[in-house]
Length: 293
Image 1 (cartoon, one colour):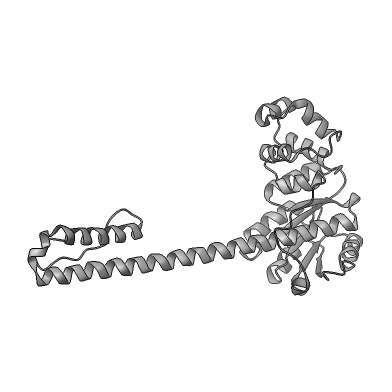
Image 2 (cartoon, rainbow, N blue to C red; image 1 turned 60 degrees about the vertical axis):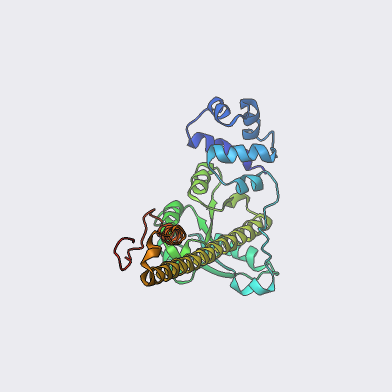
C-alpha cells in the first residue's frame, strides 16, 4: 500500500500536469489528490481509483493492488492441472537477485514453477522466443539495454503477446514504473521492498491474467468462425433461392412480373448483398428473357 502515493505522484509528473489540472480533469479535489500522493490516504475508494486509472492511463487492477484491495482471480483456479505449465523467466544481471527470486518461487509448494534465468536483454529475447513463458520478471537495469527497451521488443514478438511482464525496479524508480505500466506491464515490484508474499501474489495474478487473455482470444476466434459459418450458410441459402426462382421463371416467363416472385428474387439479392458487406448485390444471373438480374 505504501507504494500507491509515490506512484500516483510520478504518474502525474510523467504527464507534466499540476494537481490543480489533475483536479479539473478527474473531478477529484486537489486536497484529496495531495493526501493520496503523500500517503495520508492509503486506500482510496474504488471509484477514486477508477478515476485515477483513467486520468493517468495506468492499470486499474495495479492501482487497486497498490491500495491494498485483493487482486481479481478472473475465475481461473491454478491447481494440479496447471502445475507443470507455469513457466517463469527471470531477467536480471544480478545472480544474487535471481537466486533470491528463485528461492521465493520454488518454495511456493502448491504451484512448482518452472524457472528459467537470463542476465541480459538480448539473451532474454532469444530464450523467451524459443520457450514461451507465462510470466517474465524483467529487471529495469540490464547491462546491454534497459528493461523497457526489452519490453518493447517483447511486444513485437507475436508468440509472446499473452505473456505477462512484471517490471523489477530499484528504490525510487517510480517514473520507470509509470512508464512500464503505460506500456502494458501487468505490475511492477520494487526489489528493495520485495517480499516472498508480494512476489508470489504478483506472479499468480500475472499468470491468471495471461490465461484470461488467451481465453478471450480463443472465444473471439470461435465466435468469428461461428459467424463465418453462418455467413457461408446464408450465402448458400440465398443462392439456392435465387436459382430456384430463375428455374421457375424459365418455365413460365409470365412470372417475371409476378410481385411475389419479385419479392423472392429481391430478398435473395438483399441477403447476398448483406453478406458481401458492401451494400451491392453479388447476384449477377439473368433470366432467359434477359429482363431480370
